[in-house]
Image (tube, rainbow, N blue to C red; front, side):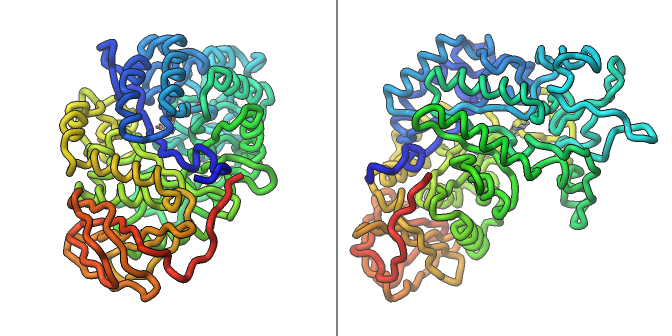
Length: 523
Ligand code: NOJ
């Protein structure tokens, strides 16, 4: 593999949902010693980076995204020494460690917020977003929280409203206050000094809000029967403000004080807005998470359009990335079914760009029924409309399934391991060009090639067998991996027979004639 390829371009990132991954202390919540014990598994699987969701002191009303102290380890998760041991052992096993950084809000139990609430004259009053009532009384504007209802809470004692983009116990920090920026940059340095390899920044596009707090406009496309109440108003002034990009560039600046670290941004925006988070004037994040596959309608023409549009939007000096699932989204095996989840895994691990794999998706975990009394997610009681929230996508990692699937060459786990291994030893699958092959049907096909190495990936997104006629410049090849049969090594010619729900990675004897570029450097 070329030397100038950065580790995060090669790596598969694995999201470890800390509270549910491995509970070694037996208190019902996952912990750092538990993760340390499972590093052997992650290394065996072949991923090269792990992203840990928050493990800081927290009332845990939002999976730990409600933080009380950004530079400590929650007692249920372990100690700072456990953290150091985890990072050292991960590095020894050639696994990079990425932390969640939650800079947009804190828990309302955070000492900063307690101080800010004290009075309008508090030295930390400007650390959060406070505002007077609207002229006629009531909340300062019509902004809605992500959980539905007004995003403003009246604070009787100090006579103003505070703003929360998410739950009411998660007040938003005010990033226009220089002391807030400096405090959060110090949080980053605290962990970077302890060897972390990067951050996934929570709700990055929310950090700046309109200074004049103007009302958001109504959503003209709102459909009350299918949309959640939170979609009734467009977030024109409460998120994705032009000056958020200065903040992101500053975050990047801190990252660049250290060698070879990574900055990922959680950004849910249309692709044309998303790619601006790579930076236009100054460098911003290395990877703005690309959730297009999570949201895509699962049919070949649609998915092809999504991939091709994204490929066309990412500039030559920017590096793409793909996400199939995370702790906020229904499990992929439940969204599209178990058979198609295998096809989707093949897609995730062969597209151009860094893949992020959600824990448990590698064993085909599905959404789990959670009895109402065990639901922890606030959203179950609010705007998702169905009253189930996100707990079903966050079930404890099923280690029994892991043990069973490790022994079975036809399992989902073995398929993932095989795909990751192939990717690791095949430069064409990492930095090779991507070329879409027009198949006009339920099969999605593309070629990945670099120099003389080339693969055709043919994915049947349908549950009926299909014959695929290939364009004349794609020559013969041999099946490397099939989602249906781990022993399949059949030779292929100008037509390919795909079984129902079958995906194939085919090693081509030679690259197709019409090649464009070879490698995309990342900045
Ligand atoms: C984004 C996280 O992914 C989500 O789980 C959380 O609820 C929100 N941030 C608010 O903290």
